[in-house]
Length: 583
Ligand SMILES: Cc1cc2nc3c(=O)[nH]c(=O)nc-3n(C[C@H](O)[C@H](O)[C@H](O)COP(=O)(O)OP(=O)(O)OC[C@H]3O[C@@H](n4cnc5c(N)ncnc54)[C@H](O)[C@@H]3O)c2cc1C
Picture 1 (cartoon, rainbow, N blue to C red):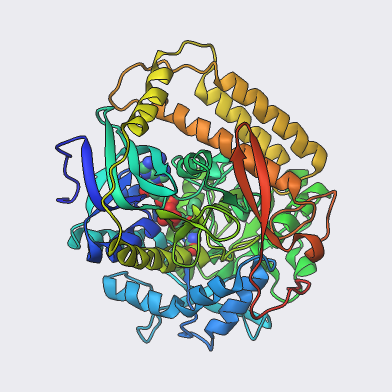
Picture 2: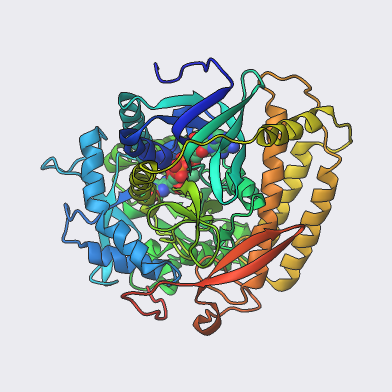
């Protein structure tokens, strides 16, 4: 791995620095590398980014298995978003999907094939033909290891382009001064040394923050560090109340069973053996969007129709031919076998919704520029793409397979925008104070005494978020949650680490990450409290209806001292007027 060299000095200069080596970061790195030097920082080994866990597929209306069109994809995504997605951006994404998948294939992604050798496609939730008439085969996949296949291809391409990797570098600060981003400060995990990366352009591609919740499909590293860092630096966060729960996490574990399992013919069944999705979505049933399916599962359980009265339902894969199961969902079969000791071709699988995906995040325009306010002003030299960003193409609810598409389409666009920006951007030199601030955070955690420990505090936060801010929310619960978050913040002031060493001090970094989770928890809970309606994944029991008169708008949260200020931005509607969602 020649790109992952040990840095010779602790001050670095790049034209572009990218935080994150998931699909968004790597696709942007390939594009930006045509215009100057690129350094990619990642707190993990590059190919361990959460993108590698993506199972089911990437959406594109190739029409390889049956007629399909980008326009239907556009419509499905708008409807899936419960009309909160910005339609100009959605049109761009769906319009670029076919080219994107063909390009990925040319870069070496081994997609699964049809009998005639074309890229195979399967059904996925919310993807339909004829504007909602019936499910369509739109998800391109590489068995159930699609993210892994794409990530490795993009990693190879980045290496070929001479991108330099800094694996296991944990970003502590993103430096913004007078409206301009000057680079980042990071801790080298192996040595504990602090490095400064001066960059003319900085792109944040740091992924999601599912670790905010007790039960999640997300990797341990999905803690939203950079959203929290930017929020504290004055950048707003958009639509943070919208956090998606995937309907089918393995019961008790949260490990994901891809929607592809239902795309291949799996069905959900309650404790009475009923295919209950027929009642909630008569046309597309088990292939309804995730917000509806996850909520339906919870309603079945609440009303006493869980399996054996317990809090789970069954995902029944026994109708799928065993050969198809082994060929198209081999990892899923192995997970189910390993973690639950079940053979899914013989027994139904216990499942429960699991925290999965952040629709909200760092607001950007369609070319990856980060917005500093709801009016559209940008931070010079700062870009974002992937799950950490909010373009917004997913609105209030993302459709399956649209995230991988989002990362690659908008990662590439951000990289190209950076190319244009670099033509005139001046050399960056960050002030010394930025490094000192980062050093202070680390040193004070290492020096501090106190009875609180990160593991216990994090568990309490995750449980509280799960109880009061997941699939069902109301004012009383959210207010109680906010009080709890404030108490946890106060206790976090007495949090100490037992490991006082500098090399590979993961306890220290977990403490830093926990600070970010706490910060984000407050934004999510307060954003949810403000939005007095139900839309997509955000379901308020005290305001169960969607309210387009007052709430067809994006939330922008700003840090103001100890408090948070809310402002709003209109949704861009170009083509499809909001209608009641029926499936
Ligand atoms: C189990 C699972 C299955 C999924 N399946 C699908 C699917 O089939 N189809 C689909 O469309 N979507 C799927 N998704 C969603 C999709 O995979 C993700 O949204 C997407 O891969 C995110 O990519 P990303 O590039 O934005 O970030 P990630 O791949 O999450 O990468 C984040 C990067 O940021 C780095 N980073 C973060 N913080 C720091 C820091 N402080 N310092 C340095 N580096 C940092 C990390 O090291 C990592 O390299 C799935 C998600 C999960 C969890």
